[in-house]
Image (cartoon, rainbow, N blue to C red):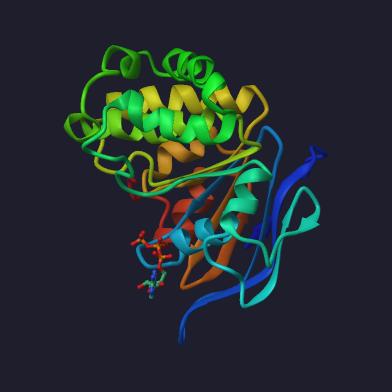
Length: 246
Ligand code: ATP
């Protein structure tokens, strides 16, 4: 089912008939959708559907074997993840991607020094702690001893301070208490209102749909629903009923 929303905002990222494989294994079969400035797209679907693979294609980690990836209208299909990052595409991957033996501040400083130079690190840290005051309180603490939610905050802070045009958040709420997920989604709402586009790969369907302007349902590497985030439609599409609680 396809009921694509009409929006006139500029497209930040577009997948055009993308196929992708891991060696002989074909994971995506002709995936097409776009993400617009200051809009959120929720990418949902069952385990193994190919959501993470789509996220990787969107950030240059997996190249399409067929089809195109456009960033701000330019063909990025052959470019690498670093070039995607320079174009403003930030990827907060699934799981805990922090250096556990380094402190919060050391983790953040590593990326900030590379992007802003030594002189820009202090300002960047201030911005990170404004976004996530909890990280400021724990700046000297080893990242490995943070809670799951705090580690997710650290991952997000590291990319949000770079002011990306698009943030790809893969399973942000996975394994987190609802109250922690609320905090993270409050920050996402804030950055959305500041103009950043979001691609939310989520198992927590309700949470993603609250924020989304558009939803893409992926099943077995194919888009089976693309349109407005009407909860009934999504439940029918993914679970075959309108009665299932997500
Ligand atoms: P989940 O919600 O379980 O994380 P997903 O929808 O994100 O699933 P993907 O992780 O994109 O799905 O996986 C899609 C398919 O590609 C799966 O069959 C998976 O086994 C396969 N796959 C994923 N990563 C690799 C890889 N690095 N090498 C080989 N196959 C892979």
